[in-house]
Structures are given as C-alpha cells and as structure tokens.
Image 1 (cartoon, rainbow, N blue to C red):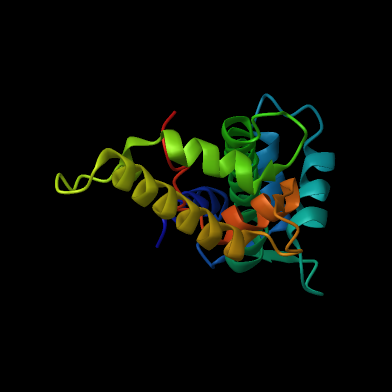
Image 2 (spheres, rainbow, N blue to C red):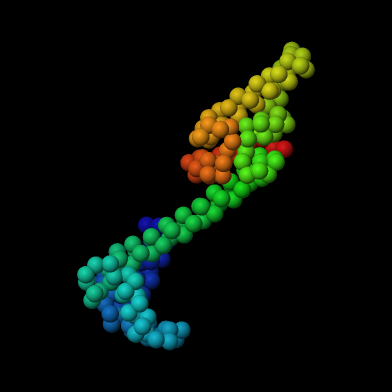
Length: 180
C-alpha cells in the first residue's frame, strides 16, 4: 500500500464510525458537523457524496470510490509536475543549443557546441594535431547525426519545440550533453 493510499485509509477510517467499510450519510454529516471550520455541514456532506459517489448507491461511500477519485487526482498532479519538469528541460535544451534564438535548434548549432566539448577531444598521442581535430569533427558530426536521426521527425535538420518535447518525454533520462 502506498503512502497516499495509507493516508486515504486512515482518513476513511476516522469517518467510518461503525467500521462497516462504508461511509453512510449520517457518518459523513456527523464528522462534518464536528468540524468547526465547516460552516454548512449539510452542504459539505452533499458535496462529498456528489464528488465521490461513483455508483448508483447514494446511501454510502466506499473506500474504493474515494480511493479512485483521490488517486486519479494524485495521478493528474504527478502528470502536471512531470509536464512542468519536461517543459523546463526543453527550455534548457533550447537555451543551450538554439544559439541564434530563432526558436529551432539546427544541426550546425548542435555540431558547433559539440566541437567545443572536451569529451569529443581525441586523446591518441600518436595522431598529429590536425588528425586529432579531424577525429573530433567526425565524432561530433556522428553524434549530431545520430541525435538528429532520433529527434528530427520531419527531417529538415531543425529541431522544433515539439520534436524536442516529444523526444524528451520518451527519454527522460536524456542528459543535455556537452558542457559549454
């Protein structure tokens, strides 16, 4: 049982005075009446039944009905948090790679940043400086091609907000890549 489900059960049990696993109108009304913060216990009770009662049984609320409503709210809240985090990551991605601020990330913009990344440096001491630079360019270009092949759905060598968003949604583990 999750923490949220345990909290739901604890609250439910505090309402369920006869312990039958259902909340009657009287149990809910009694609890609402005992809460000094509730100005209109009758309206609060009606509201609770209207909100949580998912079946034809208007006499009682089951823990399952309450759990379903509350868990669906929690799921929605989690989805909203996830979407906000995703939008932030897309914004960070574009801020980093959209160097001309035109709203899209081009292959060249990403490639130029990859060239500045020391992770793409060739460490082979037997190569000349020119050969190391060429190897770095090949590695950076290859990485960009690989990334664009996965993200650039319309194959126009530009990554739109939507393309980046969809990719990051499917790959939340994605790291923003090379440091500047």
